[in-house]
Image 1 (cartoon, rainbow, N blue to C red):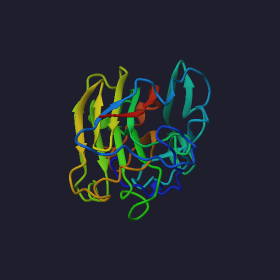
Image 2: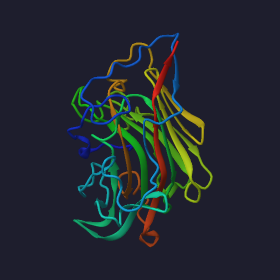
Image 3: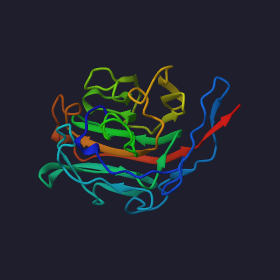
Length: 284
């Protein structure tokens, strides 16, 4: 998410491209002007949410707590079915106005760390967003290996596939964060686009990640690309190690709460139809 995180300093696991819980290292595709990056048509990791109940524990964990997550957020993340559940073929992440922990709102934050960690690939998430002032849903990726610099954020990287703040309806944002490029330094790299009916219709949020670039788009249309330029080191490009997927909905916070929170809107839901990860295919 477009912010700093005290909660980002996790001990995270390593994995082969597209597979969770693997013990061997993955040799990344070589960079060459003759390499063409494509993606397989068959996912190597996916959740279609064709079941009911709590999210599949083999694929998802719930981050818990309500310490503000480094952004003065107002929600307490739980693993309760009221906040995270699968029904009618969709994952539901629901923010509610209620006393929860030490906070006045509850919500959920689902992560694939240790169960789905990826090096490169195409990521597709079909989702319908919540609506209303104070909501801050995000679909994003965070480092699964603590290799660089401070061993945490932003040195080890972040990829924001989708962010939306309720006070700016239908304005979708995609960003990357690194030691050299981040919002704290006001140097972060990103893009944004307007989307019709983001909260009324499902849209496919996509990230294509290769050794040469990261591309972010919606419904097959790219609106932001970050290229690995000649001379970039880890400070600019830490994106050569595994990352995991995060789905969450914050309430308030430094960005989402810039214009306050409208308590009359709750409960609010982010609905996710599927999450699919397609492996990178190197062709010469």
